[in-house]
Image 1: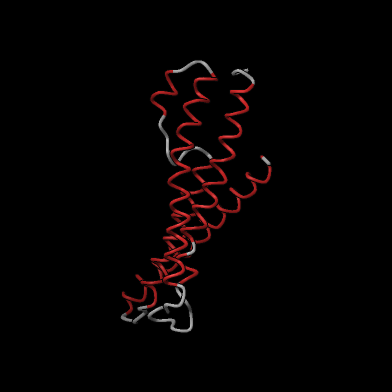
Image 2: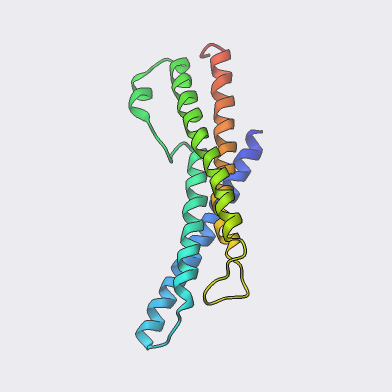
Amino acid sequence: MKKAVEVLAKIQIGLGAIFLMIFLIIVVWQMLTRALGITATWTEEVSMYSFIWAVFMGASAMVFEKRHFAFTSISDMLKNPKGKAVISVIISIIMLVFTLIMVYYGYQVTKIFWNYTWTFFPELKRGPVWSCIPIAGITSSIYLIYHIIVDAAILVKKGE
């Protein structure tokens, strides 16, 4: 299970990096075209949506690495692995509630916007653009469930 979750996180980081590169390339292209007096109005939408994908993919991958939401003030004070595991499980459960809400409402938003078209690319649908929300929610939920299982194993072993 650990290997599968790690592979999923690497894929997600890769996707986030690809969309971030697209964003940067499009922004540079946008600056060049404006300096040259060329109209490239499509760059607004492409840069915005690629940035949104980069953020959601990166944020979800950071949940796996326990870097996205960090409440370390209490756990840093604890020396007992069992106490740290209890705090980690509580935080993971709270976050899991929010990620499941993100899946539900992300799916609703994706469904609503599925048939909307892009302003400058009317042959393309906007639904896939918004699918990053439920995807990030699902993957974050997977990572959190994995963390809960790992921490529960520590609790069962009595902190050893």
